[in-house]
Amino acid sequence: MSIPVGYLIGLAVLAFPVLRLPRVPMSVGTPAFFVSMSINELPVLATLAFGASTALAVSEGDLASPVAIGAAVLAAACLGLQVWRGVATLPVLRRAMGPIDVSGRLPLWRVLAFPFAVRPRAVERVTNLSYGPFGRRNSMDLYRRRGATTGARAPVLVHFHGGYYTTGHKSSQSLPMLHRLAERGWVCLSANYRLRPAATFEDHLVDVKRLVAWVRAHADEWGVDPERIVLSGSSAGAHMSAMAAFTDGDPAYQPGFEDADTSVSAVVSLGGYLGRYFDGRPETSPTENVPADAPPVLVVHGTHDSLVPVADARRFAERLRADSRNLVVYAELPGAHHGFDLYWSPRFMAVVNAVEAFTAEAFARQRVR
Image (tube, rainbow, N blue to C red; front, side, top):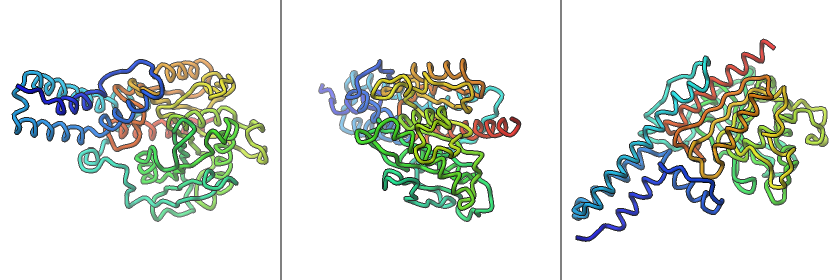
């Protein structure tokens, strides 16, 4: 009786995301991230892959082996656990948000029919707008509801991609969130920024602040509300967003536009790196530089993140709650790895609902101050 090695390897890959890896080197964490993210956030496709491979194994008589049968049962249980963890995200977020109501609306047809982040017809994209002097690295894409008039005053969400500060590009991450908010009347910006090794920590922050200043300078042109700006980021982008928000008005990060208002209403961190920059300086860590007047912050992090340990995000949230006078919401997503914001998964749909509720609360508190 032969053991179907290829089938067993496939099952191991499908089951792998249930594991919580210890802190690992980047060379190990990166491939683990890609495998886990793809399977975790595309549960329907993972289930179809399991069903197809198992059907093929049955047709070829490979499931006659007790080893193969046991592995198939274990893999099925792991897939079921992954799906359950994704669905469990909504109640986790609701508990984290406390009295702030989070919608239970989860359009599961997207998960079942087409989970990829294809822009809806109701949303238009204006590409390659320039917000600074550094060409492609200072360009962005703008998303808004098709037919929106400039007479309206829409809230603005500015998103910065992750990529270890060395790679990545605009409109590659968090697209489901950008599309959903644009459908609801927001104006969403997804921006490039200067990258390492040519750029420094200061350069990154200058780019963020330059874009916030651009939003205020062009508010009438695009029909946005300059008093409702939210900074959002994935991984390194979250680090940039938090540090820019925490250094509001610091002229060192606003060369040539020192008098511009670069304050924001809130920050949303999605799987964010929240420690010190590569040079190790404490002033480059948002965790070590929380001001008392920090804007409201939502921190969302996966419990199984293999690139940025969840303990780091937990430490950041604790520091925020100790030092900031404003709203802080922290949620750990069960079973989520890095990059949970790429697809229309049950997990990220719940996160988008929480972002809507959190920003609405932040805006309401801003009005009464």
